[in-house]
Length: 123
Image 1 (cartoon, one colour):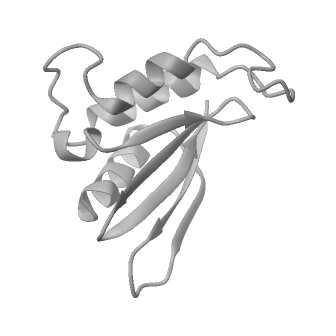
Image 2: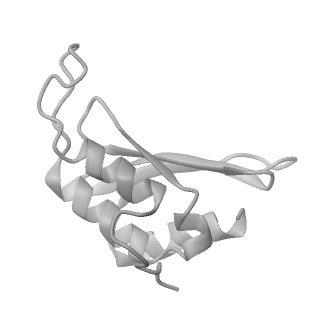
Image 3: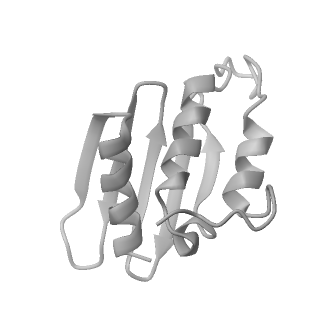
């Protein structure tokens, strides 16, 4: 299911992405890398696969290595990770369940759909 595009930049993730997409090298004054343009495109592609309920609550933040951090938390669980230029890594933590880890998964359609379904499973 695709996110609805009610008004441009109206969802928190869109505002977050707009704020971080133009960060330059050393944006944190501690040597952080500029946010990778392909990481930005990968996040935009991922968000096209996520339903509007998830999209309206998912938050994004820059990482020092130039990736985009993702965070989604509900009573049903938490997903936290990073989307980079060629790969993404994340974990899924549900109450009373073992944490699931996904490391250096390829940034492609199949992986985005898997992550979207996991996000929706805790929405």
